[in-house]
Structure formats: C-alpha cells, structure tokens
Image 1: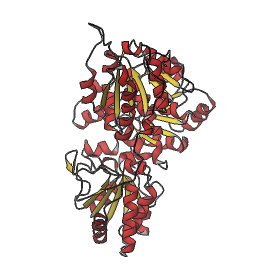
Image 2: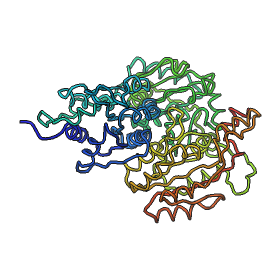
Image 3: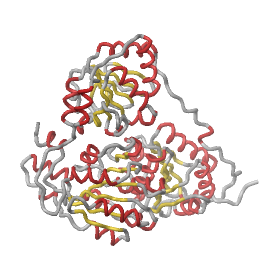
Image 4: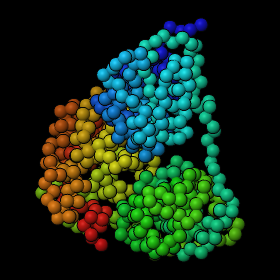
Length: 555
C-alpha cells in the first residue's frame, strides 16, 4: 500500500533517517519544497544562508566540529555554480558533506537554469550521484551518505525538480547507510616494518615526531607521547594538528613555515623525523628543507611516496597512528631500546622560554600589535571554546601565539587557500554546538567577501564572538608588495567601521584600537544573548615572522 507523500517528503524522511539534524540551505525553485519538508520534521534545524557558497561552508564547519555528515542544499543552475570553491575546500579537507542540489526538470524541453552539474562537481573533487528514476531514489540517497562518510569527501546528490513533486509510489521503509557501512577498524602495522622503525630509532641521536590531523582523529596523543618518550624525541605538529602536545615540556608546537626560530634550529639538527597522521607536505616540511639531514618515517593509513611534489619518507608504515605508536613502543621495550635523544632538562628549559616571535616594533597610533593582541585574545577567551581561523597574513600569528587549547578545538579553514569561508564555517560550528562558545578570528578583507552572513547570525539567533583583524587591506598582498619594493596602494582599501557594520546587521559591535580592551568587552559579550563583532585595528606595518623570513628575507 503506497503513501500519500510526495517524493520531496520521502527524501526528507530519508535524510532524517541518516541522522541529519541540521540543514544549511538557500532556497530556489529546485530545492524549495524539499527544504520546507525538512524544516517540518521534528528536531530539524534549518539555517537559511544568504549565499550558496556559505550554505555549503556552514555544512563543512558543522561536519568538522561534529564528525557527522554535514548537509547543505542549493537550487540548480546559478545556485549550484556558486558553490565550486566550497566544494573544493571540503574535498581538499576530507570533509564529509552531502549537497542536495535540485536539478532542472527531466521533462522540460528547455529550462533557463539548466547546466550539467556532474563535470563541475567532479572537477572540484566531489562524488556525484544523479537521481534518474524514482525507483532508485532511496538507493541514491544511501550511496551519497555512504560515500561521504566512508571516503570523507563531499557528495553532490542531484534531484530533478519535477521528480520531487511526484507522488511517492512505494512503501516508506528506509535502510540508512549506517546499516551497510563496514565497522570502523584500526589498521595495525606489519611487524617486519615495526622492526625497521625500531632499528632507525635505535640509531637516531636527535629524533623529532610530527603529528597531524590523522593523529587527532585516531586519538593517538597519549600513544605518540609514549613513543616520543621512548625514542628521546621532541614533538611537533602540522598546522592541522595544532595543540595535540600542548603541555608536554618537549613540544615545539607547529612544524614548518610557522615554526619558531628555535624549533627550526632543532629540526635542522634532527637525524630522524617520524610523521604520524601527517601528510608531510610542502608547508609542514618547508618544501623539504626543514630537516635536510634527517631520515624520515611516515605513519599513515594511506601513505604516499610522493606528495605535493616531495618525497615524503624513507620508510612508510601503513597503519593507524595510535595502533602504530603502541606497536612500536611495545617492540622498543621488547628489544630493550630506549634513547635519551633530545630529552634533557636543559632542552625543556629552552623550550619553555621559546617565543614564536619576540621582535619589537613601534606601533602606529590607534592600532595594536597583531601578535600581542592575539595573546590578549587567547588569555581572555576560555580554553574550552571552539576557535575558527580563516586564511590570510594574520592567521600565522593567530596559530603560533595561541596556546594551551585542545587540538580538536581548532578549526583552520585553509584547505584551498581561499579567503572568506571562515565566517560561514563558524556559523555551522556554532549551530552544531548551540552554546555560543565559538570564537571566529578572521581578516577584514575575508569578512567583506561574505559580510551578508552577519544577518544570518542575527536572524538565526546564533551567539558567537567574531574578532576581525582589520589592517585596512588585503594584508598578504600588502606585505608581499612591500617586500618586493612595490607600492601596496592597490591592496589597501581602508579600515572602514566594521563595528558599525555589525550593528547595522543587528549584532553587537565594538572597536579595539588599544591593548587591554578585550577583558571588559568579553564580559559584555558574555552578558548578551547575541553575536558580537570586534573590529580589531591591527598595525599593518608589522609583518608576521613567517612573512619576514619567506618574503622579506629576514634570517
């Protein structure tokens, strides 16, 4: 016996059965009825974005914060073409999202907004599932969620608009993808490879262990610290592993382009580097020049011999980071191998006194030193908050000067080098968390790309704090121009009044033009039940340490 449901209703039920509780959407002809059916489901929260890119970026943030599949929706044609950057970011970041993309009607002889979505989605690195017949509809939905979760990538589900309006002719039973998915497993290393790792550790005098995002997902921190202790290794992380070893007296923080001068000196001395759940790509290894004398081991569930144009390792261990670390530690103990390596009391004291950048600069009137204001921000905002950081000149200072936060609290939206996506990602994270404990640190140029989403923050009642590092221009380009002796005037647009812009959208706004303001402002934010924008006027003449090295040639 068939139901009286429309296809759009059955699709909504299937998505709910997949565990979807948030939808990020911008409605048009090809997805409006389904989006409405989703909104009518019990417990479903629908966030209406003002731009399709932002809807997908919100779903991306939601997925990063929860580990669940994020869901976004666009209409066809121009609604879909708007999301190419967001899809690519999710694909590069291995983020599981499903985009319900309404498609042009199957039966139409001509349709203004028709475009072939498949090549666009595939070019971005997304999986593409096209619904072509009502009898295959639920299988298509299941495939979309299964691929998103198992392959950790975005999936576009194309659903023709006229198909959605048809009556649902079948029973309403739906088997979710979780019932078909293989059980999660922790791949263990080959014992012969483990012995080779132990041989290399036994020969090493100055080893360093680098952990990445894969180590966080593996829950490998404790096992990797035990491995580093047995090997006499210092610890460091990739950018996306930031915070994993915070509190360890032998932790060097981020490896590569964002490393301190002291950390880079230790890497230069190193004779063995062990990467765990870290791709060991271009930035983490400074193009292969960070540790020129070291032999390299890479622990990864899918190790690559060549990555971003670089040879990644001398020895690859195909295994889960935690399982590998535990196996190596056990074998080290069986063979009686324990190394002192880098681990001395003197080294711990030197690490404790290290600073990512202590050079003093004069500060222009009514501005703040960006490095020192990040430290002030870090001291004011509690350590249990989610920290969302975009891309741009300022972000290296944010990531190197923030300390003592759990690795899973950092969300760096820089997988494609695109600016403008951190605000919507933060909205998705804040929607998922629901407690207002979200700090967005973004640049002024980035904010202005999608400033319309401040209205979404107000309309949806999303509480979060947004600290906008306002240097009055596109800081990355400004500093590169100056480093090359070229006038930066074309990259400078003026500071404007972002606090006033925030209040214009119905949020709270405040300007920060001197140190010491953030503690009272944070207290005010905590007392309000609304989002807040801090317009932080940073000195545009202070380059980050990374830029001074890479672009200005400072030793």
